[in-house]
Length: 467
DNA sequence: TCTGGGGTCCTAGGACCC
DNA sequence: TCTGGGGTCCTAGGACCC
Image 1 (cartoon, rainbow, N blue to C red):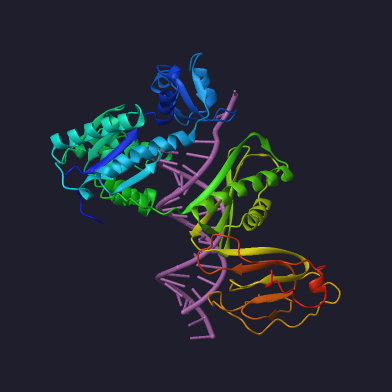
Image 2 (spheres, rainbow, N blue to C red):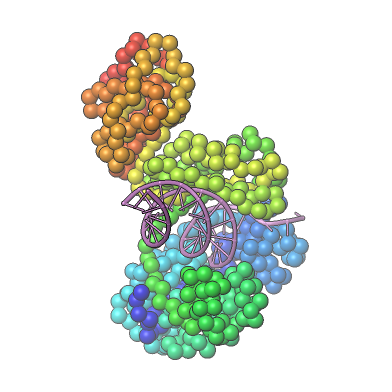
């Protein structure tokens, strides 16, 4: 870990009531009025409430139905225009990158800047105040009137706390050495990683403030909360936070999910929803040029309990057919009979390399392996069509790492012949898995043929190299 | 009209391998 | 031969964040 900073060189920026502010900027009739952006359906929740709406008690994460009860007639409830938010967000992030190359975007409306990584600058209180004022002014001009709040301190935690202290359109500098006096009287909820559950457990021990927490020994905290969280609480309660500002973080997972207006119990209807979700997920994977190994299906039951099922393939895929088959299998292992309110699907184990899997019907198959390195045939083989020859599986066995081999899974009752540099044909039922080397941006030349294909019926592999 | 959508990290147990 | 231990991978669930 890097050493603790001696100067206040971490800046945290938070756009004020961001979604609502964009709506008020773009629609003058909304200015000065309560605006709530979020889900507008029967099960929606609030993303952002304008400051006018907050006066009536509307809050982020509150059910929209509750916000409707609290807010007066004339309150605007809007579904959100994420492209517009993204555009303004990008404008702001560019301004931050003018300050320093090390900008960590936490979300669409929030970022950290490592001022020490930028050009040399005046880090005295006066210099930082001028920097923040200039930044906030430039954000207002560049975005057409959006305001931001800024915190500057010696660590990410204190900078974030600072940006909260003078919202909206405020700036707070927490000077080096004053962290404890600022932090000590605050609720433990001010600490990163302390949510409702942890706060409740601390409360049971009589710990309310950060100063209370700082008096608890690390041994006790580790015994209660486990190694990672116990150690983290110990350090953060003493305002010891040397987490780096990280400008480039790679995605670890991608997921999509949907809450239904009414619970769904019908398996057929759920499979149709699942297919739609998988299509959205695969399209996002494709745009990001990513492939994943592990598929996870998530279900929120009617009673809000959550169940996940996951499965991992030998290699990564971006194919909606493959992900969809995995997802349907995983969903099948979940009891949905009482009705579910949410269905989701995600992929993790992301790479920039791909593998494809083909579903074969019963009968003969032929697979062009021109750019592939491996074929897998499943254990169960259905009845072979008339005339198909059956030979012993080849003796060749390769580990998946072998680049030029053909691997036959034990029990596969197929025959295969290799022609030239690489394709295989045989008969079987089930799956053929084809692994591609290197990044793949377009579908490869993989073709399957039904058992009634004349070329196969003739006993010869079709010559598709002409095609 | 109770409770979104998209993420991250951690823990614990079991399988498997050395 | 028996027993034990460590490391890694996978799965499921939970807490947390914006």
